[in-house]
Amino acid sequence: MTTPSISTTELYDHIDTLIKTDTPLFIHGSPGIGKSYIVADVAEKNKLELVDVRLSQMDPVDLRGVPAIRDEQTVWMPPVFFPKDPDSEGILFLDELNSAPPSVQAAIYQLVLNRRMGEYDLPAGWRIICAGNRVSDRGVVFRLPTPLANRMVHLHVQARFDDFKLFALKSKLHHFVIGFLGFRPDLLSTEPVVEDDANPAFATPRSYHMLSNILKSNMDIGKIAPVIYGTIGYAAGIEFVSYVKVYEELPDVAAIYEGHYPEIENQPALLYALVSALVEYYNGSDTHKDHLFAYSETLPTEFGVMLVKDVIVKDESIATHGAFDAWLAKYGEYIL
Image (tube, rainbow, N blue to C red):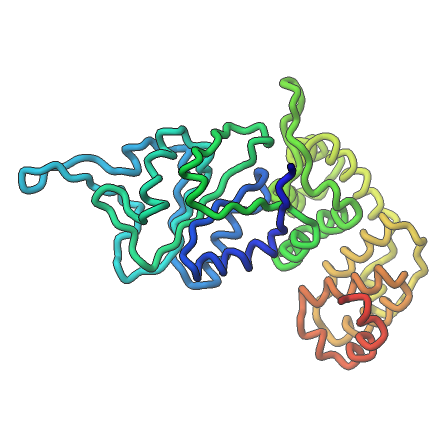
């Protein structure tokens, strides 16, 4: 039976609940979907310290500590990265747990269950969150021992475009990436390549973030095509390069914000590209707001609504513009 998955947006709410109840959590998800980013973001939003421990790089002694003699007795000196201030609050993030060898997994039994390991006690204000890839992701993964698995809540997370788009807009990812994934959301995540001699790259939210940074540095798609294939995989890369060629057919976006509203063919790829370009070029001025609302009326309803919604993510003040109330009265049913 397939385990139901949740979105990254839903994960935020569940993490908040489990932090409040001091319940250890294990986040299961494919590589590159943002597990580490989300935990770090939750810590920052809640003003909590974060200790990120990559268990796949650890040995049992790294966790338990090294022995020392004190008062003619052997004691274990806990590792420096474990939190020690009894008044501090934070998240102890045990990442790559199921990629750690069984001996390391066994070493953290007591920490997950009783919040202690040998002589070390986890301060009361700290919460434990674990994460790892799925067995089906073809990475180095060890099945969790039943006693350890039973000591945590398990949530399976799946990358979804709507969640990624919010992140992409707020993080100002390159508009080629946002427009392309709006057109082909099914290519946000692709399966790892199995063939030994094939390009091992595959598409994930993380690899598209990498691609965005590359595009901001070099826009010559023809020259960097091999880099694109090596970032998101050959199949998704071919689709991406073909999509970027659509931008050559776009009208002058600057002219639209000056009041020149060209007709555009009702082609989804072209409309997704146009919307992402308009969002990218928008500068928040009253003039841009006037023309944004006016031009959105000339687009097919789905894309006109998408344009205004995406700009709101970029500039919430647009909701106070004079034209917004009339627009909301007309199109409010499409944004629920």
